[in-house]
Image: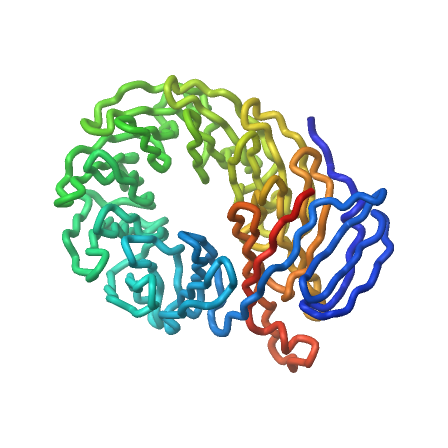
Length: 476
């Protein structure tokens, strides 16, 4: 069943101060909105029943970090982006530390024992891998590497694995194993072929797995010894290989067709013996295209593929990992799926309608067991770049303001119907990243930059620094 989402509460938008002490009521299409300053409580009241109350429990200004990544681990929130990385207490919001202020952090943090590891770029385009003490924020080590990396380091015991390779041009692919505490290079391995677009590293069975496009030779799955970096096996494929998914002693891959394939209309689901590299089975008539996102939940692999053809569209599919059988596939109407999350019985997808750069942002929810689309909701063109999240039984969509003097909003949608149930003002007008953890939702909100040649006025002066804050859901 497909729905469009109701307009009842989505029309109730109030402009109010953030963190003030005033309280006022706004009458809109969905009823009364009671806005309470101080604790940041916004309530949508319809028929006298409170729906999904979220309240602000703390807020922490971020002086210099412009975050592009927000992650939680062991009671601490980590923000990374332009201006380095910061650590903030989840429970009360106090900043623990801020480090690497001269670095534009490009990836999310990777966690070793007592160490937070990130990759970033300095002036001149130099790629740097850094290890920071998780307790104090002291920079333990920095390692400059030659080349580009798209992924956060992969932690594996007492080492961090960094994959270097160009995403679009055939070049050398190098894997560095760095000691987590010292940054010392334990080993470096160069793949014996010029490759395009290596995947992130996956570890298990004492091995390191990755896939790559091999220039003029199709694609390849690789397995290296985790202790030494020695090549243990490689498995070729004529068509494009997706990122590897490891399940015990089985390695699962999607494989695209080549120009000589008998079936050029479908991708295949390939299972290799993870220890030997031998082919175990090849099954599944998957939609042909570029695999964008993969999630494994239990015995099912969920993936989003941007199909080839006259009009680019993305398709979701679910595959049984034991048999390779396609459980379901569902078209989205989205050009590139930018957000792809699976939780319980819900698959959440988000991205722009074609054309990808200018189309409206669609949020869609599918049944994880059947692939039936529950609803699709057009959220306009101002959804924040990280897209929606699943937060304690709701779908939360961060939305930027339409002009400099306004504030952005968090719009909470009913996962069953797509109807708007709640709206929370953001403390800034620009991009926002939401990170759910239990019944608490953490949000990093940044301001839109002042347009060139325009003088900053008082109405925007308080919005220039990013803010991190926590919302907690009460009983509904």
